[in-house]
Amino acid sequence: MTVELAPSLLAADHARFGQQAQEVLATGETWLHVDVMDGRFVPNLSFGAEVVRALRPLCPLAFFDVHLMVVEPERYIEPFAAAGAHAITVHQEAAVHLQRTLAAIRETGCLAGVALNPATSPETLRYVLEDLDLVLVMTVNPGFGGQTFLPTAARKVGELAKLRAATGTKFKISVDGSVNVKTAPGLARDGADVLVAGSAIFNHTEGVAAGVAALREVLRT
Ligand code: DX5
Ligand code: ZN
Image (cartoon, rainbow, N blue to C red; front, top):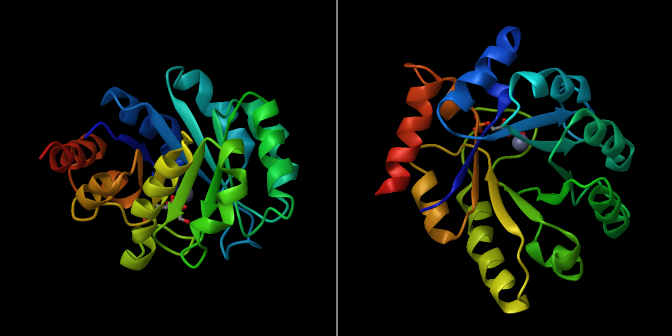
């Protein structure tokens, strides 16, 4: 199953971001998931574009996958694109003018993504499927790592795979929230192209490389 793993830096040791990001790259993985929280769209605060700018020179081969959990996401497209993001994902529930926001992301040269909260239907994206490159299925309520997996929300992976086939569109399906050795195989089987994982990788008792290896192992079977 050729699935991208996107380790989520939210679960990394915030005092050693650079080192932890390099540990991920040393395993051969290239995606780095950057959770941006504003304390309004979600009840938590995380980090800004400067983290991406600071990490870029340390991880020249990395693909920075920025997940904006903010209100008025259109205000943050330029700063993250300028800092070196490769993909910028906004929440469907926060982007009032979603089509315009997706076009603005693509204009920067970044891939444009839309995240769906657990209660939000994929049908809300039917008229912008050609304007986006990635759909992020939240399998937890956004705002924190280490939460419990919501299997009902995970059903959207299969629905999106069908919608993609039926409409001849090419977007990637990414899943975010409590992805681990138990939940990852089913998500990949259902059609996930990218699996975001925080605790499963950065809180693995034997370290980052062991966390990545354990996920890769269950995705091999
Ligand atoms: C939650 C974030 C996730 C989170 C994943 O709002 O969007 O990326 O960091 O962490 P785990 O894998 O621990 O659920
Ligand atoms: Zn995320």
